[in-house]
Image (cartoon, rainbow, N blue to C red; front, side, top):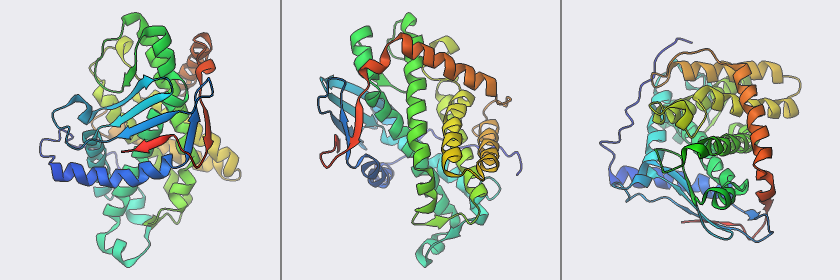
Amino acid sequence: MGSKIIYTDVSLKDFTLEAATRVKNDALPTISKLLGNLSLRDHSQRPVTVSVELDEFAFDKKIFRQAKVTRLGDARYLIEIGVGLLGQLSLIAKSIAADKHVLRGRTKCTLLDAAIRKDGREKALGDFIFHYMLTFVLWHEVAHIALGHLDWLKQNAQLNAIEEFGQIQIPENEFIHYQTLEGDADRQASLWTAAVTDYSISSNPFLRYPILADAFYDIGYIYGALFAFLDSVDEDIPLSLRKHPKADIRLGIALSFVEQYLTQYHKDSHSMLMQQVYAGGVKAISTILHAEKRPFDVLGVYKFMAENGHRIDAMQLRSLQHSVTNSSNGSFNVA
């Protein structure tokens, strides 16, 4: 693998309503499938209702490039995922898939039928990257609800919403709590995403990886690329006022749960597969979107996770956690 810089123009200056509608319609089946019959009850055992909205017409609104979760009232929440943000993720996915020298699947994956082969590996792999990134982003927002973050903010800071990007009016002494919530949401989203990793690879209707090591290298790269992009949004914000951990810390959190999953389900090969996951992830954060090259700080990752655990205990956050089950009466209404 070369050390090529991947650059993508995510300004959306030429992003049309037609393109916005197309990316929304591409995302909706994945969102509906992931949420499906997922059912939540809050810490008081009340059934929870969650509306999920994607507004392709919101070009001139802040939410267009935003992901946001709002507490509407007792056991009622709203998740908004900006169609512009989805468009940016789609552009990044296409840029990564366009270069034969970045992901191993670009030359080594097998396309499953004639129609897919007609479109080629680049299209199939770009779709795979986009939907994997979308899965993490969606689970991150769901995690804010399921882990009781919004209820904690309402009780302790009189805040009703969590916006993922941009500066909002948060008292400076509350930023450490906000960062704790974001790290916690990354932890849960990583756990849920890792749990569907094998399914994403083995049940993808468009492509297959003949060699599992190549698939997990690419999974690591996709995680790294996602966090490098998300980090670029906060790059000019002082560390003490950032909402999220830096890209390498977020990557480390995610990959630690991939490792946990591999240890459980690929016992004989987990060490080799994990080496590939880390290699892909570190390659991505050092090359994509001109992210600053820096060594991957393994000790820093575990230090952050340990400190975040202590902060969560001190905040008594788990007392507000929701229960998650499968039920025919799911909690989510995807608009």
